[in-house]
Length: 127
Image 1 (tube, rainbow, N blue to C red):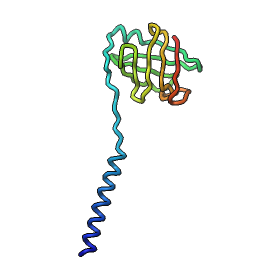
Image 2: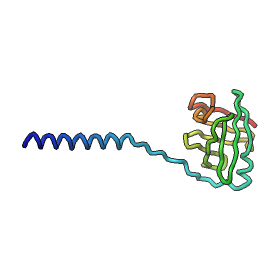
Image 3: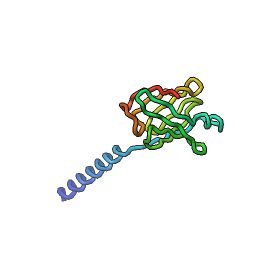
C-alpha cells in the first residue's frame, strides 16, 4: 500500500513538473498596434524607394490603410505607425522618416527579409 501511494505521489509530482515545463516553453507573440492614425496624404507620401549604402533598395508601399516595406526582392513586411514619422515591424525593426521623408533611419535592419546586415544593424537610407 505504501508503495502504491508513493508511486501515485511520484506520478503526480512528475505530471505537475511536466505541466510547468510546458507552460514555461509557451511563447506569446504581441503584435504592435498602431498608436498613430495616418491620413490618406501621409500614406501616399510614404510610397517611395530608398537606396542603401550597401547597394540594396528598400521600398515602402501601401494597400488600403496598411504600410509595407520590402528590401530588394524579399518578402513584404507590414509596419505599424507608432508616431507621425515612426514605424515598427512585428519583428522589431524600427523606422524613422526624416527631412520630409527624404531619409529614413532603420534600427534592427537585419531583421528584414533579404537585408544584408547583422540583425541589430542601424542604417540610414536616402531617396
